[in-house]
Each structure stands twice: as structure tokens, then as C-alpha cells.
Length: 112
Image: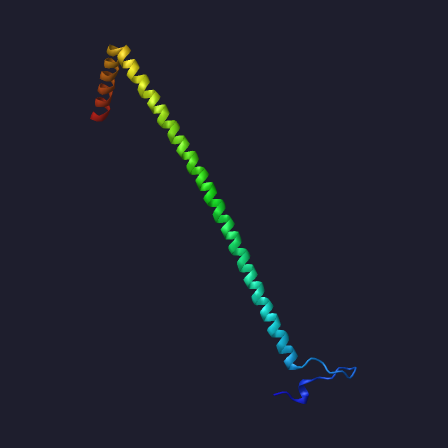
């Protein structure tokens, strides 16, 4: 319900913005704020996706390094086992004495 008091006169005698003009500007500002919020949300989602991708890439790298380390340790254990078998075959009496000594030491430690 527009009345004559809604249109204000300026000092020049021109009429100023009406209530309808102000309401239209408020609607325009609200629409711009909604668009801005959508843009910020999209940017945030994009950054989250980028960070998720980076985390997955680094996790894959670490998993690969872990697998390489396990493979290296398995190889070292296999080499140690071959070396031990070779030593036992070459020097059976020394190996038997070492096993006997290890058994006695384990028995003494477990007895206490």
C-alpha cells in the first residue's frame, strides 16, 4: 500500500527511492549473497576434493614404500637362513655346541 509519504522529496525537488525500490534492492542483494554462498561452497568442495586426492596419493606412496621394505626384509631373512644352513652343514659340531649353549642359557633365564 503505497502512499504519498513513501516517495520522499530531496532538496532538489526530485523524488528519492521508494519503499518498492529499496525492497527490490534488498532482494537483489539477497540473491547476490546466495550466489556468493554457492560459489564459496563450490570452492570449498573443490579444495576438499583436491586434498582428498593428495591424501590418497600419499597413502599409496607410503603403502608402496612399506611393501618395498617388507620385500627387502624378506630377502634379508632368506639370505640369513641360507647362510645359517650353510654354516650348519659346513661346521655341524660347532652348530651343535652353539645350540646346546643357547638351550642352557634359555633354561637358566627361564628358571629364575
